Image (cartoon, rainbow, N blue to C red; front, side):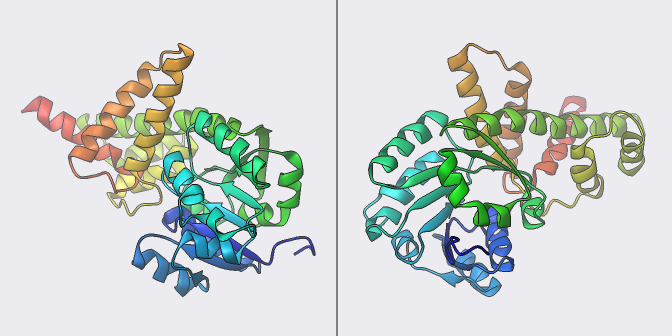
Length: 299
């Protein structure tokens, strides 16, 4: 760790991504101070060796660099600017890295407000599941001031080996939405293909072997295919979370005049899956909705 690196790093939001980030930072030798609204999440990160704090303000009082792994940009604003938020701790916080997938316009405005207070705001959404983040295999999409990125290099290196700086604040959210569109549709198409194969009498395991041995092979097939075939959907990333991202894609595309018909179908598929109770399962569980649709259409 370089002499310029912060010795303590904060994390607000200790779900799947937040816990994976905590593990990476602890393994790199940082002290980690974390907060989540859920007691069980605070206990989980404490079991990893982090300090569980009672509020975002307490995290900000302990750390000059804080990572955010919350649900959306409204939560980011609240964590930072609420009366008991990170910035209520005075001037301890110097750099905030937002690892959530957010709304570009909100994040641009937030970055300007924080800059006026002497706080650097970096976007740092990660492309990859929580399991890939924990292994250091996710790609970190960075946006914000290049000097601030350079100052945070030891922290960012601990999070991800692959890092791409895509521009000013707001651009990482845009880049994440565009890449997530492709990733999400890859999963949905794999699930559709598996359901179709089953309807033709091809077992899921046999279909997956076929996909992996042909040009249909993809990272989605490699990572999510075994989950779809086995029916085990312990979450590495959740259907509910990806629907939030797809809704952001559709909103941004509407503003830009760009139709996204496949993503509209995908959003409808996920809404149906959530209505059926699958929202907190892994994204691979979208295959269950294709199976339900087949059953209902044939009844």
